[in-house]
Length: 163
Image (cartoon, rainbow, N blue to C red):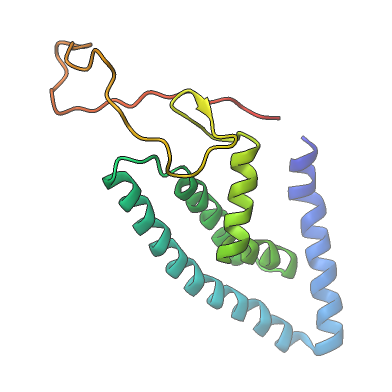
């Protein structure tokens, strides 16, 4: 609940204050230009990083590995893109943290260490990205649902909400 308060009340107030301060120092047009410039640069960076992450995820999937890192990176890219489209310098800074490769990869590593994401019923704590593999269960030939098509693949998993 505190997070939502900070997100929807405190952050916009800080953004307005900072925009007013920067505008009083450099003028209103340069301030607006900086906000637009960060949005344009962010969109270009988002496109480039998104394509690279998608390509890595497809390579992992085709080799039978779980793309846990790439999934979290994709989520952070989406969040970073949304933050860059929001006018303000604080959200732009947070958005660029999500879009700059080494910073994003460090953040993903921290999320994986905390066990935010689980793969195949085990937490990813200490999990080296890409070391898990999709394997068929012992009873893969026994049909679970007789009406299901044989080419249908069902991947089961668990999740745990961390507070």
